[in-house]
Image (cartoon, rainbow, N blue to C red):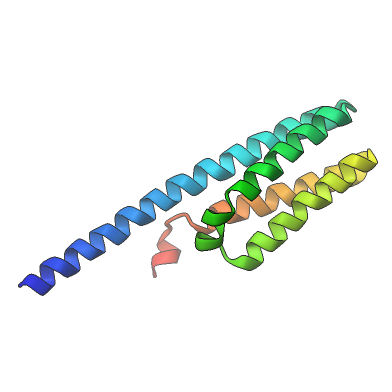
Length: 126
């Protein structure tokens, strides 16, 4: 009987940690997407300095989360999102509206994809 109780406690602990992970990842990605949207709004107005500032703030937040992201996110996803941040910054520093628009779309897609991977769905259980 003790084994079943210990197993049940371990299961509940894993489930609780999964919920905490989903919450933390959602907060991280929502914050990043908010900064990216702010940056995009500045870029659309031609305010490249503020667009760069917000994009750099998002990139710095992404890099500060490195100890966490390297545990819970696949490394290939981390690498592609990081590359997308730098592609965006490259387009912003070049003040190329067309390239920036595509870079915003790519980065947003990467961040949204990362968030979606950790959502609990029926398909992820079975």
